[in-house]
Length: 126
Image (tube, rainbow, N blue to C red):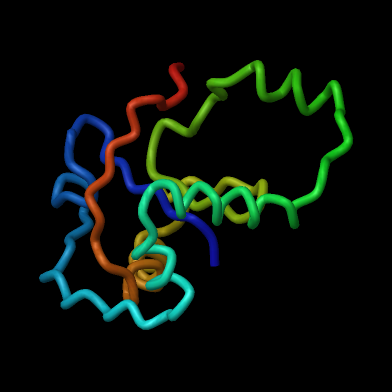
């Protein structure tokens, strides 16, 4: 599907009534059953670093490209002023989608997800 970022202009709330979106009650968290994840979570700091070093050897080296370095050094980049959907490199503003399609799009993104409070203090300035 893609990534959805919800932001209500003029409000400090995400997914608030101010922008016509509501979040229902929080479902119970799904159990963590993946064996490898459980093993990784049980590692102490030293074991975790050793595991990470071993894992990182399979990534291989990347060719140095000056354009990639220049792009990275230009951070922070511009971001949309409101809620959007990001699919690959395509950005679609939610306000540009008609109301029924917008509601069904948001519902499709959140139906099997669990709310998570997060803070991003390094948002690109305008």
